[in-house]
Image: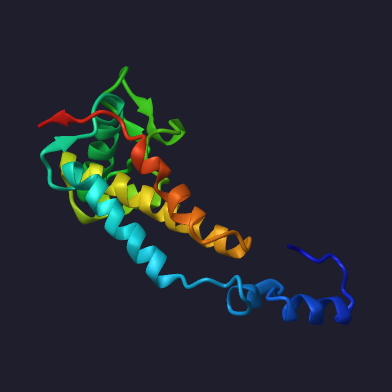
Length: 171
């Protein structure tokens, strides 16, 4: 519940009812449920649900491998060789990779992966995707908490993307 008034009486009543404003919202109140245990539960559930991909027995198929894997490979190879990843000379007699929104050049997780290895494996790309899903779920859980919604809805909402993953392809 948000209060749009700046009256100190309304703010004191909100704090007495278990609400707080701004940065104090997470720290004060009856609805301020703990963060650590739900996040640990989300991490455990994400590992269990994502185990086929994390173990390397299966890989995320189709566009993930036909379109995005080569993009990540090119980014990693270019960075490892000290070349610019902005121009791809191998497609259509040259292609401005920087103009491609799916090139992964400006995606921090894939940029970090490309800086760590010059030849990212299928497993590394899948793990990066699953880590991004986990971070999104964790952010959603924190948003639930910030909105003072019931804690039980947060892990359900955070795990929803985990349950709609694409079919696995055996490696």
